[in-house]
Length: 90
Image: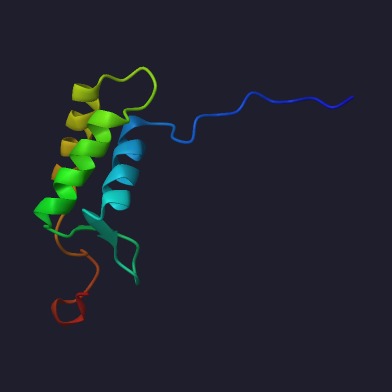
């Protein structure tokens, strides 16, 4: 007998969802060598991320809470990789 499992949501936390929105919008990028997220300081990409959050929040989350989660995630991401040496930064 074929059994179907209930599908898990793609993101387990609102923080993970917010980071994925920032990546999708191009507001952050991953250090190619170490994997740390880096703020690209692109105001247009940030605006796109907030627009995505407000228009497509996760199930059960208000548009305002989704935008706040994106802002909080962005606040916790620096502009440089902490493992890269000053002359190695991408």
